[in-house]
Length: 231
Image: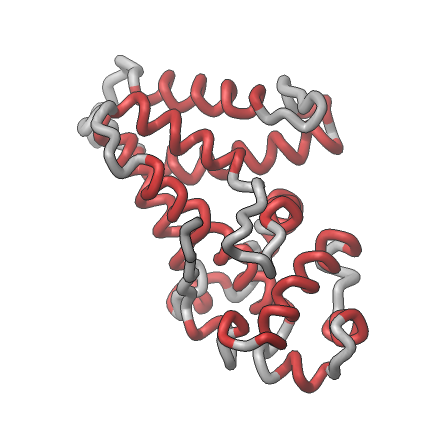
């Protein structure tokens, strides 16, 4: 078993919840409540009741629930990047590395016993359903300058670097990387809730169709012969 410590931008929290038992309870039960209620209906008052504490104690860790959401989503992005780095560490074949990275995008929901206070499966559902609310805000530029989305950008950079190993001349590696991440989340969501918006299905919990979809788009793009003429 590998001990894992996730490091996030300190601007997201007042006190890092990973450092105390109460903080870990805040992480654990905020994941469960947001997944159960949805982000709009989630409140610190409801969370305080769940953990048998006070709202004031939660505010000692997070200024508001928006920062808490970014923290949780950021935690998941870091978890995904860790898995990509770990599982591609000794891989030299570019095709295989791409397939591993894409598999991580859809399979990171498996619960890891090394991090008992995070239910990765429930957190994955939050990322699928709620992650866009972390950065689709009026203050996104300011928050970006504060480094709120560093984990997401780091994950995109990691994936784009792997794509460029396959084709170093490909001009849209970052755009493709972020699109693949969003494609995974959107199509999982659509398959569950609005199936007419996707061509994939989730049968008995299997996400294999999503992986096949991502591989199709990734390799079609990276192996494409279309030449872009610079203006």
